[in-house]
Amino acid sequence: MKLAWILWLSHNMLPQPAADSLCLSTTVYLEARDQSVRGQEAVAEVALRRRDSGLWGDSICDVVTARHQFAPGIVPASTRLQNGNAWAKSVSVALDSERNWALPSGSRREIVPGASHFAAHELVTPSWSNAYTVATIGDHTFYRVQSLKPRL
Image 1 (cartoon, one colour):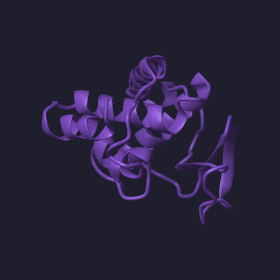
Image 2 (spheres, rainbow, N blue to C red; image 1 turned 90 degrees about the vertical axis):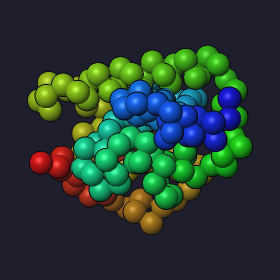
Image 3 (cartoon, helix red, strand yellow; image 1 turned 180 degrees about the horizontal axis):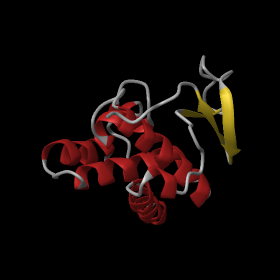
Image 4 (cartoon, rainbow, N blue to C red; image 1 turned 120 degrees about the vertical axis):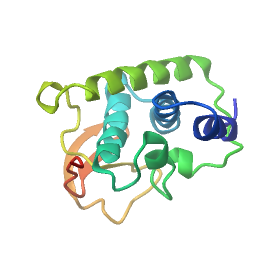
Protein backbone atom coordinates (compact mmCIF):
# COMPACT_ATOMS: atom_id res chain seq x y z
CA MET A 1 0.00 0.00 0.00
CA LYS A 2 1.33 3.44 -0.92
CA LEU A 3 1.78 6.30 1.51
CA ALA A 4 -0.08 8.62 -0.89
CA TRP A 5 -3.18 6.42 -0.71
CA ILE A 6 -3.07 6.26 3.10
CA LEU A 7 -2.75 10.03 3.41
CA TRP A 8 -5.51 10.66 0.88
CA LEU A 9 -7.80 8.23 2.69
CA SER A 10 -7.09 9.79 6.09
CA HIS A 11 -7.57 13.37 4.86
CA ASN A 12 -10.58 12.82 2.59
CA MET A 13 -12.58 9.75 3.49
CA LEU A 14 -12.23 8.69 7.10
CA PRO A 15 -13.99 10.35 10.01
CA GLN A 16 -12.12 11.33 13.15
CA PRO A 17 -10.78 9.52 15.15
CA ALA A 18 -10.26 6.77 12.52
CA ALA A 19 -8.17 9.12 10.38
CA ASP A 20 -5.90 9.94 13.32
CA SER A 21 -5.46 6.26 14.13
CA LEU A 22 -4.41 5.59 10.54
CA CYS A 23 -2.00 8.55 10.53
CA LEU A 24 -0.47 7.51 13.85
CA SER A 25 -0.10 3.90 12.68
CA THR A 26 1.61 5.11 9.51
CA THR A 27 3.97 7.30 11.52
CA VAL A 28 4.91 4.47 13.87
CA TYR A 29 5.53 2.23 10.85
CA LEU A 30 7.65 4.74 8.93
CA GLU A 31 9.60 6.04 11.93
CA ALA A 32 10.08 2.93 14.07
CA ARG A 33 8.98 -0.33 12.44
CA ASP A 34 12.40 -1.85 13.17
CA GLN A 35 12.37 -0.71 16.82
CA SER A 36 11.08 -2.38 19.97
CA VAL A 37 7.47 -1.91 21.06
CA ARG A 38 8.74 0.54 23.68
CA GLY A 39 10.50 2.56 20.98
CA GLN A 40 7.36 2.56 18.86
CA GLU A 41 5.27 3.67 21.83
CA ALA A 42 7.70 6.53 22.45
CA VAL A 43 7.32 7.76 18.85
CA ALA A 44 3.52 7.63 19.18
CA GLU A 45 3.71 9.49 22.51
CA VAL A 46 5.64 12.39 20.98
CA ALA A 47 3.03 12.73 18.21
CA LEU A 48 0.17 12.60 20.73
CA ARG A 49 1.84 15.17 23.00
CA ARG A 50 2.33 17.47 20.02
CA ARG A 51 -1.33 17.10 19.01
CA ASP A 52 -2.40 18.09 22.50
CA SER A 53 -0.25 21.23 22.34
CA GLY A 54 -1.92 22.44 19.14
CA LEU A 55 1.37 23.91 17.88
CA TRP A 56 1.54 21.59 14.86
CA GLY A 57 -2.19 21.21 14.20
CA ASP A 58 -5.41 20.03 15.73
CA SER A 59 -5.26 16.38 14.68
CA ILE A 60 -2.65 13.64 14.56
CA CYS A 61 -2.85 13.78 10.76
CA ASP A 62 -2.03 17.50 10.83
CA VAL A 63 0.83 16.94 13.27
CA VAL A 64 2.53 14.08 11.45
CA THR A 65 2.24 15.70 8.02
CA ALA A 66 3.47 19.12 9.19
CA ARG A 67 6.44 20.23 7.14
CA HIS A 68 9.73 18.54 8.10
CA GLN A 69 8.37 16.99 11.31
CA PHE A 70 7.56 13.27 10.89
CA ALA A 71 8.15 10.72 8.13
CA PRO A 72 4.65 10.99 6.58
CA GLY A 73 5.42 14.61 5.74
CA ILE A 74 8.98 13.91 4.60
CA VAL A 75 9.24 10.65 2.66
CA PRO A 76 8.06 10.46 -0.95
CA ALA A 77 4.33 9.83 -1.37
CA SER A 78 5.24 6.91 -3.61
CA THR A 79 6.74 5.06 -0.62
CA ARG A 80 5.18 1.63 -0.20
CA LEU A 81 4.40 0.11 3.18
CA GLN A 82 5.29 -3.45 2.33
CA ASN A 83 6.01 -5.26 5.59
CA GLY A 84 2.65 -6.68 6.67
CA ASN A 85 3.87 -7.91 10.05
CA ALA A 86 5.46 -4.55 10.87
CA TRP A 87 2.25 -2.79 9.75
CA ALA A 88 0.10 -4.95 12.03
CA LYS A 89 2.44 -4.24 14.96
CA SER A 90 2.39 -0.49 14.20
CA VAL A 91 -1.42 -0.44 14.15
CA SER A 92 -1.55 -2.27 17.47
CA VAL A 93 0.98 0.08 19.07
CA ALA A 94 -0.82 3.17 17.72
CA LEU A 95 -4.23 2.05 19.00
CA ASP A 96 -2.82 1.08 22.41
CA SER A 97 -1.01 4.42 22.61
CA GLU A 98 -4.18 6.34 21.80
CA ARG A 99 -6.09 4.46 24.51
CA ASN A 100 -3.33 5.14 27.02
CA TRP A 101 -3.15 8.84 26.06
CA ALA A 102 -6.93 9.21 26.46
CA LEU A 103 -6.53 8.51 30.19
CA PRO A 104 -6.23 11.43 32.61
CA SER A 105 -2.66 12.75 32.57
CA GLY A 106 -1.88 11.36 36.03
CA SER A 107 -3.02 7.87 35.01
CA ARG A 108 -1.10 7.58 31.73
CA ARG A 109 1.97 5.44 31.29
CA GLU A 110 4.55 7.78 29.78
CA ILE A 111 7.56 6.28 28.03
CA VAL A 112 9.38 9.57 27.34
CA PRO A 113 7.92 12.14 29.77
CA GLY A 114 7.94 15.64 28.33
CA ALA A 115 9.66 14.65 25.08
CA SER A 116 8.66 16.95 22.23
CA HIS A 117 11.09 15.68 19.57
CA PHE A 118 13.12 12.64 18.60
CA ALA A 119 15.80 11.78 16.09
CA ALA A 120 17.39 8.70 14.59
CA HIS A 121 20.98 9.91 14.68
CA GLU A 122 22.19 7.51 12.02
CA LEU A 123 19.97 9.46 9.63
CA VAL A 124 20.00 13.08 10.87
CA THR A 125 21.61 15.45 13.35
CA PRO A 126 19.04 18.18 13.93
CA SER A 127 19.99 21.63 15.14
CA TRP A 128 18.14 21.00 18.41
CA SER A 129 20.01 17.78 19.26
CA ASN A 130 21.80 19.58 22.12
CA ALA A 131 18.45 19.90 23.97
CA TYR A 132 17.65 17.99 27.15
CA THR A 133 17.79 14.24 26.47
CA VAL A 134 14.79 12.41 27.92
CA ALA A 135 15.76 8.89 26.79
CA THR A 136 17.47 6.84 24.14
CA ILE A 137 15.49 3.83 22.99
CA GLY A 138 16.96 1.73 20.22
CA ASP A 139 18.17 4.00 17.41
CA HIS A 140 16.14 7.01 18.58
CA THR A 141 16.99 9.70 21.09
CA PHE A 142 14.06 11.61 22.57
CA TYR A 143 14.42 15.25 23.58
CA ARG A 144 12.56 17.94 25.47
CA VAL A 145 13.24 20.79 23.06
CA GLN A 146 10.31 22.81 24.32
CA SER A 147 7.82 22.40 27.09
CA LEU A 148 4.52 21.44 25.47
CA LYS A 149 1.41 22.21 27.45
CA PRO A 150 -2.02 20.93 26.44
CA ARG A 151 -4.31 23.60 25.07
CA LEU A 152 -7.09 24.68 27.34
